[in-house]
Amino acid sequence: MAAGGAPANVAVALARLGTASGFLGKVGNDFFGLHLKAVLEESGVDTSYMQLDKSTNTGLAFVSWDERGDASYLFYRNPSADTMLKPSEISRDYIQQARVLQFGSLLLANEPASAATYHALRLAGDAGVFLSYDLNLRLFAWPDEETARSVVSVPLAFAHILKINQHELEWLTGLSDPLAGTDLLWTSNLALIVVTLGGEGCFYRTADFNGRVGSFPVEVKDTIGAGDGFMAGLLDGLRRGNFDFDDEAMIRQACRQATAVGAISTTRPGGIPSFPNRAEVDQLLATINREV
Ligand code: ADP
Image (cartoon, rainbow, N blue to C red; front, side, top):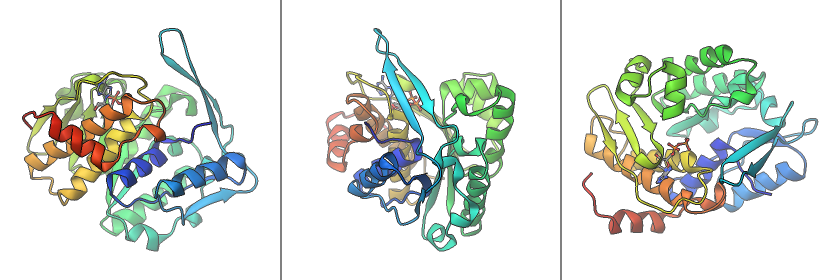
């Protein structure tokens, strides 16, 4: 049994890096849901507004590996408690205390969770909280690809930070080249897009500049959670750089830290257990001296 779920993974990875985080979402009031809550609490994530649903089970994912080591997933979530999050369960006061609201596209596939997500995004936007969108495409949740493409594109109009991997970029735009693909996605509201490139690191762009940051050479065991670790490394770096999106050196440093967290996470099995603490990340950043 392994606790996970993209936004929860990001919250845990942030706490390990020394950035305070809290989880807004819903699990079933059952053995698995209570386990997820306990893991978040042990990891230092605030769960004050984590909801427990009495009538719906916690969603489960079964992961299996073929002889080449490639993972396949089987999801038991039809419906699952996460999709039952209601707008009335989102606290305005809590959201207003944050610097960033991190969200993904999965909850946009079902009601009432989609309405709850948009409610949270509106409250955050009104309070000047940065909205950070990890596209994190999960096609199993959608009736068809066209519906998925149109619905997951909506938050691009108001998100400030977008993280997307290269496969998702190609799926969304038809272009795998990060510069050309993100040209199509760019909106005036965005401050930063980061495209993750697996073992090649990442590409970043703002309104004024773009570039690439390489990854770290590591012995990969399991890539589960790498993207979530990356996301946390990026947000922690941006927070330490005071979200100054005009400062390219700061953005590069945040991307470099993000690739360090992603790389370390691939050397260990699982998601949550694989995320490094501050000291491990600082050590990797210090030992591999590369130009940033
Ligand atoms: P996702 O997990 O969202 O699909 P990627 O596969 O692009 O995203 O990986 C996210 C990040 O994890 C990369 O930007 C990189 O920093 C790190 N990473 C992934 N695969 C490797 C690898 N083979 N070697 C080193 N770092 C990796």
